[in-house]
Image 1: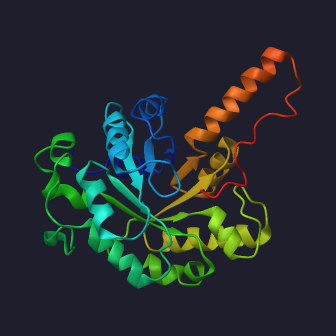
Image 2: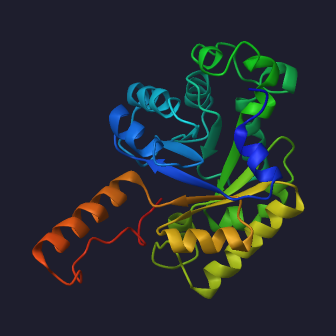
Length: 268
């Protein structure tokens, strides 16, 4: 593998559909990863997944064609490097508010020969990717900063100009809260639509990929048609709850009015 497979997909102007894992289970991760997603992200920030389970999830994802990625708890080098060593081929980092923070994130994800500060020790990555992992790591590892505060929105053009950054990812829950709204995904609020368009434009003008978290498949498709390159659909917990509720509703012959909310007000 010479480059991250998502890069080839984006060269063809296709949108990557991303899964989001919050359940601390390698088996659950394997079930999700086998459903045909382009990538699967292990959430170690707001999910219930700690490092040992994240490793099992990354191993499970690697049994499929989905690209394994991780959202880290914070812009902190230790956990970023540990997840990369474990085989994550993309890091999504929360609360990137300034160009300096974006530059730090890039540095933590790059080895010295690519101008970074990442410590050498790709224990599992050498096995999951191959012996050329270190040489090709810049093309293999995606570095994606989350834009999810008013401060980040105000700085988004300068953040997007950070050398080595691969993408911007909208966290709609925190961003809507920061803009004075109720935390919400799949928003039609004019202030959120304007913010999304500004972030998308900043990414595109700097040759970056643009990602966004969505509560539903139809909204995710709409975002892809708008130009977003990476669209996440809900998460494993909410998809499981919605599917279970729908099955119960059908079995009882109910009208579905009490079906589980798929999470439009979630914080992811």
